[in-house]
Amino acid sequence: MKDIDTTPHKYQEICDKILARIESGELQSGTRLPGVRVLGEQFGCNYHTVRHAFETLAEQGYVKMKRGSGTFVTERAVDYKKRKVSADKVLKTTDKLGVLLPLKQWGYYVTSLIDHLHHSAEEQGLKLNIRTVTEIDINSAALTREFIDQGCCAIILPWLGEDQHPVGLHDFIRASELPVVLANPAYGLEENCYWNSRRETDARNSDTYMQCNYFCKVGYKHIALLGTDAEGTEYVQRKLLHYSRWCDREDFPNLIGMVDRTPKDYERIIKRWSVHKGDLAVIAYHDEIAIEFMEACQNQGVSIPDDFAVLGHNNNPSGLRVNPPLSTLLLPYDYVAKGMIAHAIALSEGRSAQLTRYEPQVFYIRESCGGRARLGQDGLDAVIKEIMADFNT
Image (cartoon, rainbow, N blue to C red; front, side):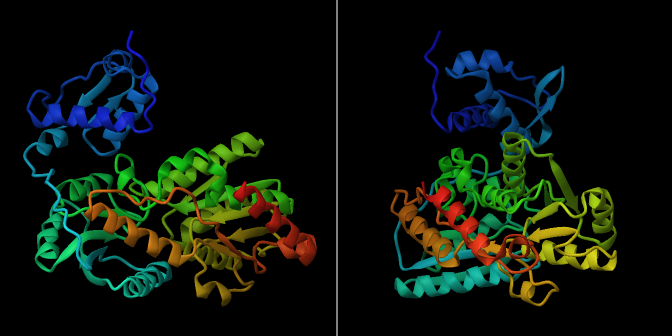
């Protein structure tokens, strides 16, 4: 038997080899792939790694996993070989970087991040060429040629939107003639992210763990996660995974609410969680969702934080204007901006500059989370200090 390969991204190698067989025409639509144990033997890894590869390809639309029947090549996968989704990268460092944004509703986080990208670029004597597109997909990849003609050496995708489809993102990066940097890791594109996602093995350093630990130390016995109902968002999926893992390890009930962000859908979640009034803390995916949820609670006669405590993310100034003011946390913008720029320049030189450790999130504790009311200022300060100490160990 072959030695087991424990390379962190061995599953991506399996994905690439399966896609290569599709591109060559060896695998046609409807073809059943060998079982996970058979491929594990072929590739010298365990079947969990092969299953991870299958799940990644399924998320990208290239295979379909049918319970009890096997894993099959899809029609979309056969179309893969008809598209130019693989281009040699132009490696030439210049003083210009391209920035590409989807034309979607930008929140405070996106505009603030772009502002910090500008400042960081200016400090380093770099220029940014910002463009917008309807979608990040195979069609928008044609813009990379324009970026090259304008002297750009890499492309930064600082934000993708909650409905970004993984297939479109993969196609764009494969077809791009310039290196591409992402703000968040995506399955199969880990090397494109400005920070090394291998640190995900230490989930204590995730914002979700910090939020859960905060509410736990404040004394809540029920902690819920409130997110957007968007299948294409891998960051949401990662947050769901971290939340579920934390609940399992700490023996907390798993309470998840996925909303389409309409008042009616928030009312549905409020009704479901009403049995936990007085002892429920809600972690919102970002501040906009937190604010919408708090407004829906107010309309339903639910008190924040007496009935539900709420903690957001991104430190949107609008959170200061809600009643009570929204507690939140934030990954410093300059850390993200400088990290993306450094990795973009590095990729243009054929190397990597991925950050290998997380920057601590910053807590902005106000009134919506109930921490100060429950612990007092001294107790609250002690909890934050303890969480930061755990983060840095």
